[in-house]
Length: 188
Ligand SMILES: Cc1cc2nc3c(=O)[nH]c(=O)nc-3n(C[C@H](O)[C@H](O)[C@H](O)COP(=O)(O)O)c2cc1C
Image (cartoon, rainbow, N blue to C red; front, side, top):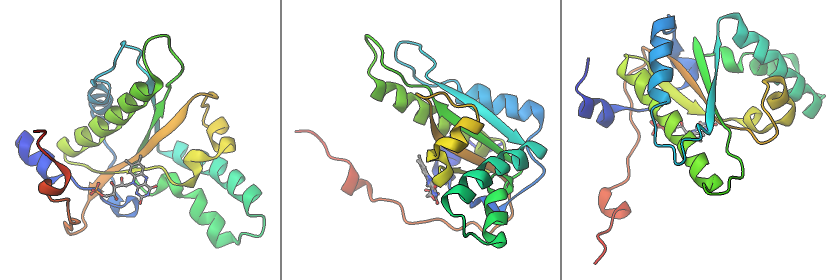
């Protein structure tokens, strides 16, 4: 188990296609969701929820993506359709973080949305802490009403991200990170 600071310093995304099984166990998924739920939440509104896609359910969700894709691109060839069908089956586990932000007398919607982002980040870090790699993605289908309906999202709900989770055997390649001097200033 890596030290917490090492963990936070080394987290990086791994492409869904590079995420292999085995998927996290039921107990590990419970741990991931518990940690994802432990985020700042102004007003204690719980303005987010999670949808777990594993096993055969990933392909079933892929059919909803295919239906939306075919209606947008009726000329699409079978190779393209097959790719869309497999969108949520690239990694052994996908967890959607759903924002439930809605107008409230006291708590701005913006803060509710931020809490959903925090939940997604905690989810990613929990997976990392358990030895998995993850990729927080939205992609086009996160914004398609037909797909959202098929996944059971209400009118005010939005996908904060589909977090793809699995084991990574790819060589560790990072990307350049911003220099702190460029992103942090001291107010004076
Ligand atoms: C809300 C959100 C949605 C994202 N959606 C995508 C996406 O659809 N496709 C993609 O390649 N990266 C997406 N990313 C970026 C990746 O999660 C990741 O941050 C990026 O590839 C950089 O890698 P890093 O996490 O190692 O810094 C998204 C990030 C956020 C915060």
